[in-house]
Image (cartoon, rainbow, N blue to C red; front, side):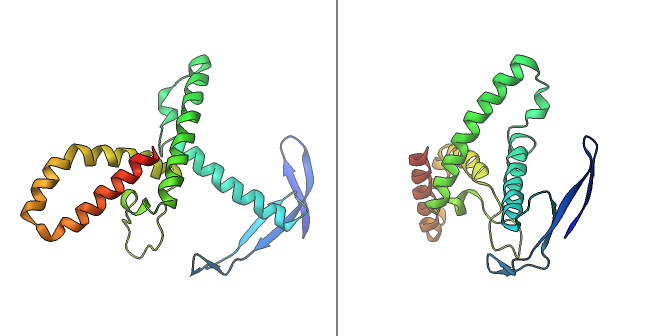
Length: 174
């Protein structure tokens, strides 16, 4: 379906209305489809662009309130450019570690489910990579206390050993 689109810079232009409905996503029936206003001619291209936008929005959240908290630095000029470069390097490292942790099956230790009825973890590869490092640090800090607690409750020892194994795998991914 073609319509007319109004923009501040160009006035009115043509647009296409794209509809997309994937009945199941990750085994769950989706209640509704997508309706996208686009200037792209192909439905396939419109869906691809929209999916990329979702990833970009997640990256912005990771760099802002969901991770590095860039907006609270109030940096500008050369300092802002240097900070963005450092964040880009750190973000890339966290993504790579997070993807490696996911493919190794370690996400279940770092990103535990907190909501009842949720089947899939919703944490990004960035979040898993960043907090995986913090998780390892906490495990190292509390290891002696945990060993003492395991003596009191030997039935929990296999779970603790699983955590130690996960910690070793995460450290190898760093």
